[in-house]
Length: 442
Ligand SMILES: Cc1cc2nc3c(=O)[nH]c(=O)nc-3n(C[C@H](O)[C@H](O)[C@H](O)COP(=O)(O)OP(=O)(O)OC[C@H]3O[C@@H](n4cnc5c(N)ncnc54)[C@H](O)[C@@H]3O)c2cc1C
Image (tube, rainbow, N blue to C red; front, side, top):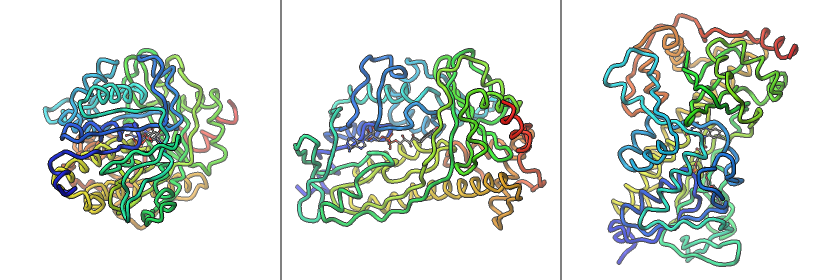
């Protein structure tokens, strides 16, 4: 039987490299289509189920204990494809959250619904469901160190202990630091075409526990020279922090918890998110990349961050990974594995480009703020996006819903234009000068 027919009939052996958010979702989607799927991850399982936040060591995912939110599009796809994962997240303390919750509700606001939980809780729910999915074998503590090849195609992987595992398809879900390019190079096969740039952002985030705050503004609040992220979590937890430029030396003071708290207090719609018991100090993370890899070698594909990774302030990574995993399922279902790179470019490419477009403007704007220079690029789309954000923040419900549809990655976002009033970011909060004097005094 040809491989193509085998894919279409769901009889292949698939090796998924990486048991992160994408790898686990991908494994379940493929196994439910009849494939035999083995998932490998070098990190061990959590030693005490139920203590994932406290005890799960995940060196393979550096952002494991940083703020995460799953967008409504992720929730919608999960509800359709893997609803039992959502049941598990809810049973572990996941909380329903509607992005349009500040508006008088209308029935179509269901599309803004999601469930919130800290990343270790989310990943544990996915892992538990994967472990019970017929056709999925989950092996942890197994490091992949290279590829097995057969002619010009990938036929399996090599493990750290010298073993090999053969498969009809290797799915690289190894995250943004995946070594696939160097493995292909070592094997004498063409390395993927790669586009990669430092996004330039740095995050200063904390987790809290207590009486969960009600949002008083958007979850992503833009201000002079920084943005503030406020993300509800599971049960009685949440995370809050600053997103700014890695080049902004004065704002590195935000690493200091006292300075961080003094700074947050200067933003009235976010300050109450610090009214709880801190679960962490200030976690700083930079070095984030926008990265796109086009893998065309037969026998291997890349999915999720391994293929397409963006700066996370729009919170799109897991949703793009899930959409990408579902696309692979659909392409295999049609028996067309060799066209996956083309389908990726068509289906996932526009999300990547839109996210990178936003990021590049926003980081340039933040950098300009730090030097006191007005940011005025010649891009009417950016002017329109800022006008929409300003309208959404100042009581225009139609603009807010349109803006949320884009933010939530919904497929049917209306193409609404609002007049530019020249107001940039209307939310109350410190100017840069005020922020710097607050940091100096803290
Ligand atoms: C600070 C920060 C905040 C973020 N916030 C959000 C958010 O709010 N919402 C959102 O949707 N996304 C967010 N993201 C992005 C999100 O974390 C990623 O998109 C997501 O983790 C990608 O999942 P993945 O499964 O593709 O890769 P990963 O989660 O990186 O998983 C890769 C897995 O592969 C394993 N692995 C790698 N190499 C090997 C090997 N050689 N052998 C064996 N195993 C290997 C690793 O151990 C790991 O388990 C954030 C990212 C950062 C950095």
